[in-house]
Image 1 (spheres, helix red, strand yellow):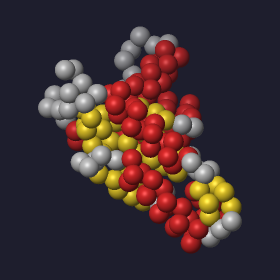
Image 2 (image 1 turned 60 degrees about the vertical axis):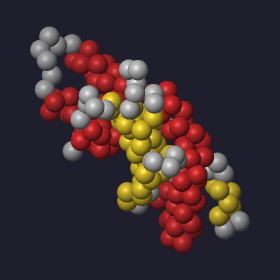
Image 3 (image 1 turned 90 degrees about the horizontal axis):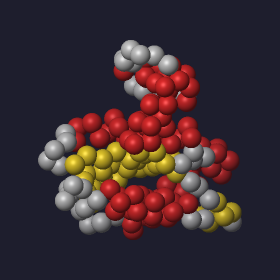
Image 4 (image 1 turned 135 degrees about the horizontal axis):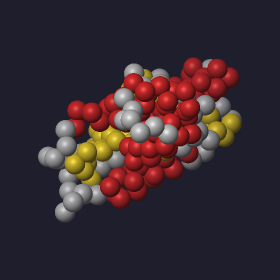
Length: 171
């Protein structure tokens, strides 16, 4: 099947986490992170790997039989994160910006997954929601068309356009 052995990396960046930390304190922020980690852990398959990357960022990597299965899985994770959380007599709703990168094994090289997922999560953060490689490629096509040039754009020029137009910095 064309989607066999689809490896994915989904990055979750919690929205408004800094506000929770700043207003309710670091203990409440820690409790929030623990609850989010617990919810994500309940979603993953036995062979998936869940990690807290830094601050308010989490990542899940694994494989599924199809891109549709990955989309369903990531949406379920996002819904779990967004369920109300009770902290210090307050009910909070925290959403996550989600970036997804995929590759098909053995055809594709998985070494670029982190870079692609990082770009996707920054794109999602800028637009509010979820982004994938496909949505980023579409945005790049839009930027290229707006530039109205017959010459191919360099990677540096594309990065410059993404930063200028969308506030997305590519390292």
